Amino acid sequence: MRFKDVFSIIGPSMIGPSSSHTAGAVRLGRVARQLLGEQPIKAELTLYGSFADTYLGHGTDLALIGGLLDFDTDDPRIPHAAEEAEVLGVEIAFRPSKEKADHPNTVGFVLTSEHGSVSMRGASIGGGNVEIHSVNQFDVKFTANYPTLVISHQDRPGMIAGITAVLGRCGMNIGFMDLDRKGRDGDAMTVIETDAQVTDGLLNELKGLAMIQKIRVVDLAERGDMG
Image (cartoon, rainbow, N blue to C red; front, top):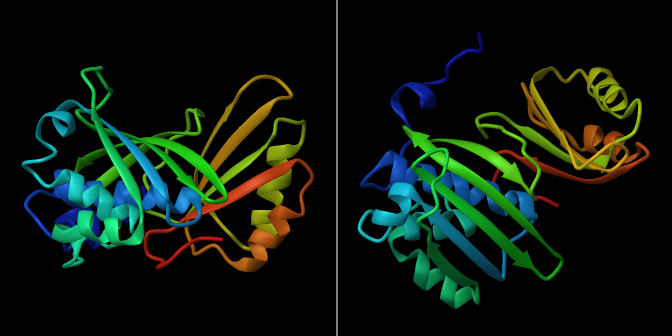
């Protein structure tokens, strides 16, 4: 069993009032931003369950916006995140939904930047922890508690073996892996949680593999945009 860090035991340092409705929401926003690779210029957020019912009263809207602006869970700017987004020219829309979700604290993101877009769906599961349930309509799951590779690629024989061989050569241990594909020989996505920070050398080797389309790194311990 993996070592449980202090965060998983006592929760994050945060701006309140709720680890689920604020700290977890900040982390979801940061994951979505890192998947996009830069600050969005437009964000559409669909809220489900208790998020849809209470997001204004609990400050979940401000926490989600703060995450999209790359604020951490204890950033004092979170209560003013909407104003910060407006100054930066980020257009944000919230859409409460009555649709039932797998978890009551679920949010769907559609983010757009000058260079592309990304969709993501995830949930705040308590204590500031999150689970990502899908990325760009691929059913892949990860926790964002560890450095995570999100790899878009073609589904071809030997593709996964090639990816894991690169990780092995770079001395990177795989803690968890998930894969979804659109169909045989179609588009696919592989998610790999690692036990160490992802290096530029590892990324360059992975990008050299045939059929790799895009790689994003989700690492909430790292600051700033991911290229």
